[in-house]
Length: 174
Ligand code: FE
Image 1 (cartoon, rainbow, N blue to C red):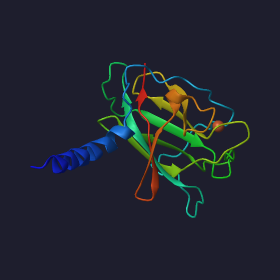
Image 2: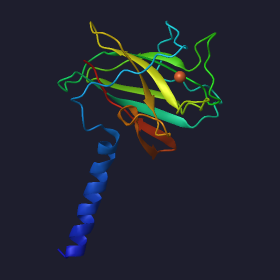
Image 3: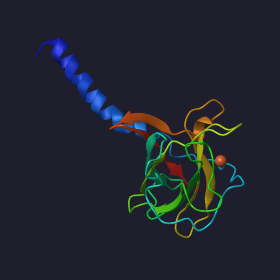
């Protein structure tokens, strides 16, 4: 086989392997840092896997990943409670728009459909979340999307696929 063909095959293999790697986080040993709850948490958000409203103008985004224990074992059935600003950067403090809870599956995987939150003054864009494994303590933190001022350790891996922004973020609980 000519070297150029071999090189091309190697490149294709690398490209197909690189996609999931891009969405996974390499370091699952260090616990995910806590971040501020902020003033807008409302308990009792509905159970749902999609926060995107009909006719939402924000960029469609799929946020997904795995919830791990400190020793890198996937944690089944962790509860994830998300809240975020809408595309205009506003929180719904009367109802539950852009708020929802879902449960990770038996392999610790979760998947949330939503829109990229809008910016509001003084903050890089972020989604708030509380993550709690059955019988464990809740971790309250925020996931960021690479704006300036966003903490690297809490920034999702971003890729564009099938017309939606794919944001990958794994949690490591204490
Ligand atoms: Fe906020």
